[in-house]
Image 1: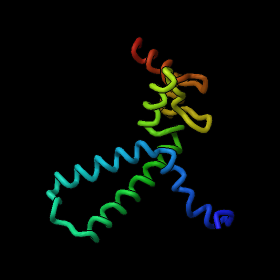
Image 2: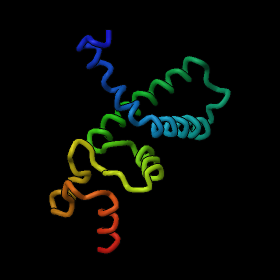
Image 3: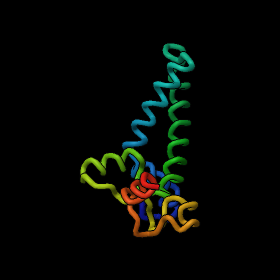
Length: 125
């Protein structure tokens, strides 16, 4: 079933969602707890409403993950995790592109720049 091209296209947004699993997990928790407290939903919504809220959060997170990974190589929390794991700053951009178009247009950012070099540049500027 997964070898079928149509199935692969339909399920491809889930790849981005999975690549940002930590960010999505923490984001989902924050959104659910925040919505519960902000709108005073605890004890007032049933199973159907809870399911619809969760599905809406999934749709928003899948769209966010796809957009984020079209620019960056990994999610924000995955980047932090990787920084602490390897004790160095991973590259910001994905797919061989720079992260910020305005930096690219002004010539500040080149493909070889890493996040740590960008941070140093802007702190010294």
